Amino acid sequence: MSKPAPKGERGPFRADQIRPGDRYELSDGHPIYCAPTGSRGSRRNLIGGSVLDTDPLVTEAGIDTGYSPAPNALRAPDIAVGNVPDAPGWVAGSPPLAVEYADSGQDEQELQDKIVDLMGAGTRFIWVVRLVGPRRVEVYEAGKPTRTVAEDGELVAPGILENAVPVRAMYDREAAHEATLRNLLQRRGYASVEELRAEGKAAAILSVLAARGFVPDDALCARVLACRDDAELDRLLALAVTTASIDALG
Image (cartoon, rainbow, N blue to C red):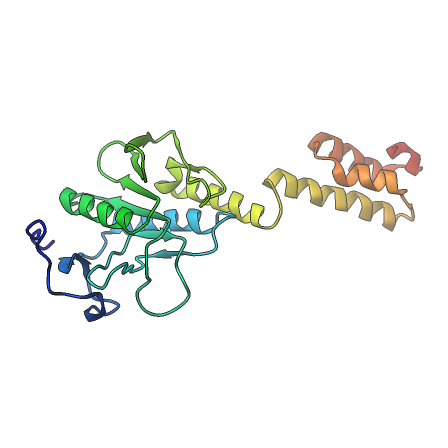
């Protein structure tokens, strides 16, 4: 990292002097060198980004997106949720939710300066995911004291995310996949894997009845399609295969 600039002294650089791919951010005109992400951090960026990007409320998310809320400012959070337009160049303003992964070698003062810059530009939530020491996430929320959420807790961002995010899903690949699957199902109108499975069984019951020449009435169709009891669906499917009379399913 570059040395911190004297307080209140503006630097000479502007965001339009930095090109995509350059490893610099700007704070009040002062350049800040950003080293490449280490192996552990890159893995966490990917899985955390997947969980957040697939949330049903999220329409835009990005990794290492550059934000320039002022000509002499440029900040790039590890993960940004919201205000990530599909366009070239730096983004005006800031993301509603930003995530930073803090690994060994993290410059704590620089991290705090980055948090101040992002919050000052309008970011509502910043999650600092600690990769050193106990698994935990520090939550910075506009207008509220900083709090720490432990590994067994959940993270929320009302108005930005629909679902709470388990802290484990920001670290652990399997937990991230589980949360991502939940999100993807909800984006397609399913509350859970169980609901999708029940819909498939219900459709199978009606298909078997039709193949056997039975015509279920509207009431039976509605009852089968609305059923979410796995054991009851199995019973009805067995009856659909073996019954001599559709009345047995009534």
